[in-house]
Length: 120
Image (cartoon, rainbow, N blue to C red; front, top):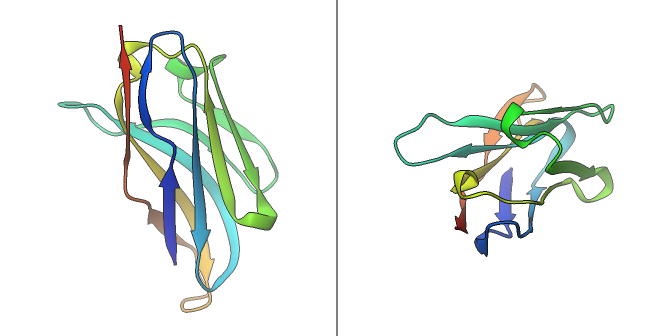
């Protein structure tokens, strides 16, 4: 099982970006999917998470600006980021709790990070 993320880049403050992440491999089901971020010198923090029932949770700093969604048919999760601020600059990591064919038990997977840079 792999998570492949894309969509990062450089944007001016106030702009928007959309991150995408898709899971591939021998998957039975996917529970939660989400995004975390890590800025230089800081701990990795939750950005947003979406569960199999569609419920969501957001980090306080992104509420009202970011929207997470998922496409279960594509095993994909998306993060629409609006009104971006310089403090949103970080490496963004896709995360998913997946039940793969190999273990048949939940496994926590991480994708390779994608850089988001917001210039002032």
